[in-house]
Structure formats: structure tokens, C-alpha cells
Length: 251
Image (cartoon, rainbow, N blue to C red; front, side, top):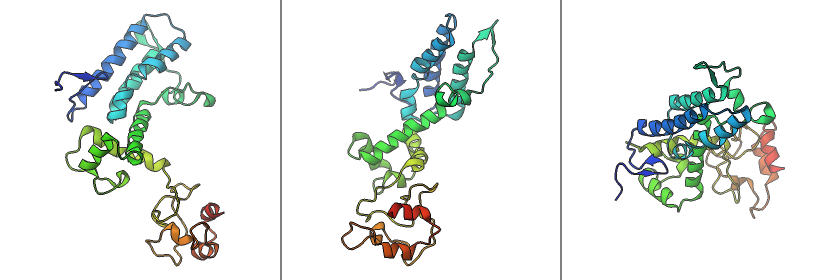
């Protein structure tokens, strides 16, 4: 039996649809840590280590389960930024560089600090990837049974009255679509005109005008009878030379 006041990994076990509960817990933890460090005489290197190892690690679990509000992520950024630049006479020092610049990799002149909003999206995207690749896990079976029992995660709808957790994972599909690409294998499950399977292009879809293949044709239709090689004659007959990205796949 789980009580309403119980916590798991620092977060309340009962969240419902309230975002304020999660926000207040995470904010208070980070704020207390930063407040305790302000009185310490720290060089920039020490501040950097504390921010990366502690302050930016505190919300990791919450961000891997819930999509936190944008204004809350901005609030966390402001807390960490204020600690990084320090204060003098009770007033914050001037931030000479935009925080987004400090979040860039060190090879590009930044300090590799985390952007909380991007980090939140990445962690939720990882949960979405698990739903795609590990359908037998307990989480996958529960969410699939409730929200997308008759389709894949990428085709799932938000549904009516979705949980706070599902809403965040569902919105992570945007992140997955930016980097995901289908494996062709025998080509029977990949549609030529609708699926994202062409590397080297922004949309990763075939941009050539349609030739003799109908709208439901699969990549298998572009292979020879044994399915081990591309049918070069059919490919040249179907796609125009303008679609160089397509030819690069078949090379």
C-alpha cells in the first residue's frame, strides 16, 4: 500500500495532473544546494563541477518521467546562472555571456552546461525509444494497453484524459522523428513514398516525383526476385536523376 505522502527517488508517489508538486520539490532541492554553496569561496572551476555534478543532476529523474513546464525550466536556468556569475553586496553580477553560449560544447567555446528544456526532451525521447524497442517491458505493456494497443508508439494518439507521464512521453515523438530512420532489411514493411528511409536529406523521405510505383508500394518492390539486390532498371525507371539522395542508397 502506497501512501500519498510517500516518496520515490525524491518525488511524491502520487502526482495526479499537478505540475506544481513536481516543480516545487525540484526547485527547493536545487535552491537549497545553491544557497549552501554561496558562502563558500569557490573558483570558477569549483562552481562548474558543483553545477554539473549536483545542481544539474537533481532534476534528472523528474525530467525522465514528466515534461516540465518551459517557464519552470527557465526558472532553474536562472537559479544556476545566478550561482555561476555570483553576487556582490547582495546584488547579482552582470552575466557577460548568454547562458545558451555556456551550454555549447567546450570545443565550440562553451562550458557544456545543460539546457534544462533540451535535456528534458532528450530524456523523454529515451523513454519513447524504449517503447519502440522493448515492447515486452512492464511500462510498454501498460502504456500500450491503455493508449496505443492497435498501433505503434509513433502512430499513437494522445487520447482522452491522458496521464501526466504519458503526455510527456507522447510529445517526445517529435524528438524521435528528428533522428529515427527505418532499417530496410527485406523492405516489405517500408513504404517507398511515406516512410522516412532515405539518409542525407532533411525529411528522409523520397523527394522524386512518383514513377510507375503506386502509393502503397514497399521497398521490396524495388528489389529483384530473390530480394538480395536492387533492381537497377526499375530504380532508374521510377526515380528521376534529380533525386541524387535516392541513388546514393542504391549505390
